[in-house]
Length: 112
Image 1 (cartoon, helix red, strand yellow):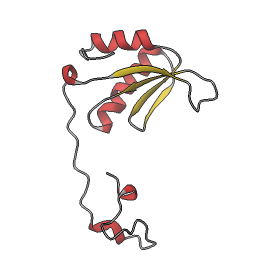
Image 2 (tube, helix red, strand yellow; image 1 turned 135 degrees about the vertical axis):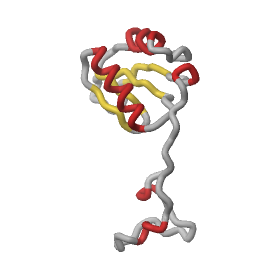
Image 3 (cartoon, helix red, strand yellow; image 1 turned 45 degrees about the vertical axis):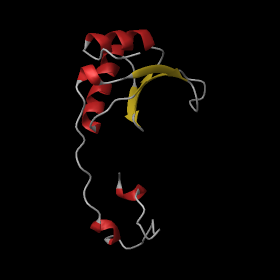
């Protein structure tokens, strides 16, 4: 949990004192599940994108660095732009079948 989203037990969520939230423990590193245990879901989305189609990959359980690396691999294979944010890997365009095929080829067997 990031410090900006974390409320204190006394209900205080914001302070102008820059050192006020330093008493919270640092975020612990997240272990990435092995590829064969990842349950990834690939779907098409157009919501809040001005009618543009994107392929979303959801369900990655692991560190942000590993999610970024997988997103970069998929964007490179698709030859398309995209991003990794809010827990989703976003690829611009309709690449559902290709993404599912590549993920299964790379060992993500529980991909749908």
